[in-house]
Length: 475
Ligand code: NDP
Image 1 (cartoon, rainbow, N blue to C red):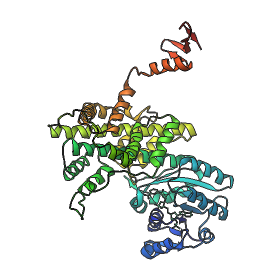
Image 2 (cartoon, rainbow, N blue to C red; image 1 turned 90 degrees about the vertical axis):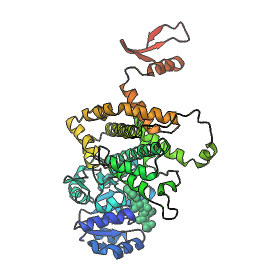
Image 3 (cartoon, protein in one colour; image 1 turned 45 degrees about the vertical axis):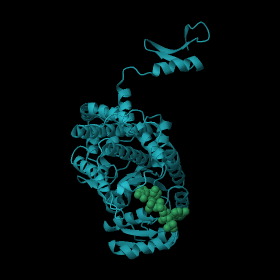
Image 4 (cartoon, protein in one colour; image 1 turned 90 degrees about the horizontal axis):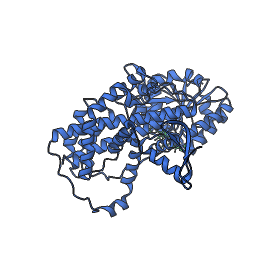
């Protein structure tokens, strides 16, 4: 037994992370359900470092130093359960099983419980950054027992991305917390992408820019506050010319977005936790709407009403879109961090939001300059009631607010959908409102269901005898 870590599941993610471990000097035991992938990896990249080829789970487990550390990188869902079961049968108390797939956090809670009853350490680790990140440094969000991080942490930290010398990996919290924060990360990624998409839509349809012109705007934005991986790749995608037609690639790609499910999970979880993640939800719904191809085809030609003239001050409108994007992005992150706080309270995880902002600065898809600001905001006040209230973000929105309103109004008058820009602005206006219409909602609920209400001027719950003499009684 000489391998410090084993990787089972050698599709794109697993092989790249196995190579990353090997390049960092670790001896890596390799296993895949079918040997083909193992041999393909060894043939193409065997020179990356020290690998141990194994065919059976027994051989794989025997190749590992104790306590054994195995990273599972197989298809999420039933395959993960099958592999865990096989491994658990071959492993010994104290060994560590790490699930690096995109598992649903409630599955991770269940698996951690089952493994701990068998004396095994189970670590659900969110891994972000796609295949490139897996190879060159992902962001890693390991949950599970704290003790297991002592043996595992140094390995994971050495392969993780680094920003200012700080690894993008830290122990997140118990059981499903690592996969939970990875899920919210993906939800934020959906919102971020949708917001960029809306900005692109406005440039295309409100200002009539072509793909190249829009690419130039994003390239320019990437040197300011919006600097991020997603803005950078947006410019690259928009600059790509299709070899077949000579047109911008973006103009020949079908406009129906797909999804693998983590955004939907984020919204479902937010609904259960009662957290309004409107930006993420709009992003998930926008993808669903874009994919309703038959319905959309039938609806082309529906009345638009009288549309406004296009904006004439191109420079001003461009700056307005930038500000609207930035403010909406602040809202999307604020909502994501609210969900993390709610999950933390619900499951008693003691999550540290500042740590998440720190490890998301590198390796992952939402890496951005912006995250330094979030990290600073939580360092200054770990109990921040909303990210929007941190002085930096509060001022950023103050600067952006007029632009933000102009963009949402212009889009509406031009008939251009901006669900995430608009819902983020509505969220902001609702949050800062002194009186919401919810008082009326409470009155209605009391009317039809005797659900009671509270008064602004007295303690307790009250009910009006709506079907009686309409006097008020204390409930
Ligand atoms: P896939 O999700 O496509 O999974 C393929 C791997 O799973 C193969 O090694 C396959 O083995 C194995 N597998 C499938 N079913 C079983 C089973 N019943 N028993 C044993 N092994 C099985 O691979 P990816 O590399 O794309 O992703 C791996 C994990 O990482 C997934 O959970 C994914 O959600 C997650 N992830 C992916 C990212 C990405 O960018 N792709 C980013 C972050 C996380 P075989 O070769 O024998 O078919």
